[in-house]
Image 1 (cartoon, rainbow, N blue to C red):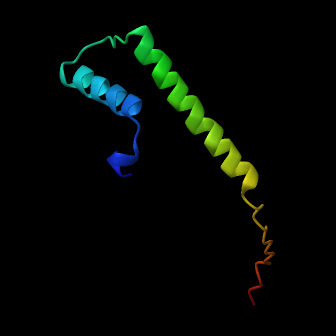
Image 2: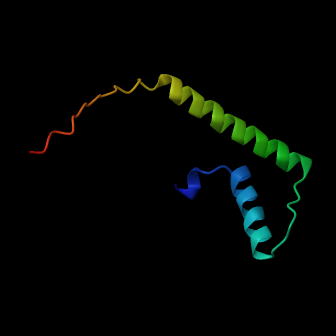
Length: 72
């Protein structure tokens, strides 16, 4: 995924997680505004995925039956 396509809210969250992991921290602290922005961004992504799923044509199911043959 191209990082230029990732929103600033998700990049900031990813940076916080990276720092948390590098420092072996057990807590992640976010301001209320950061949490709201991240929530808004995640919700928008999920809504877009839902729209794509509804718009995608249903896949055709191919059914194959095989018998095991026989041994003589």
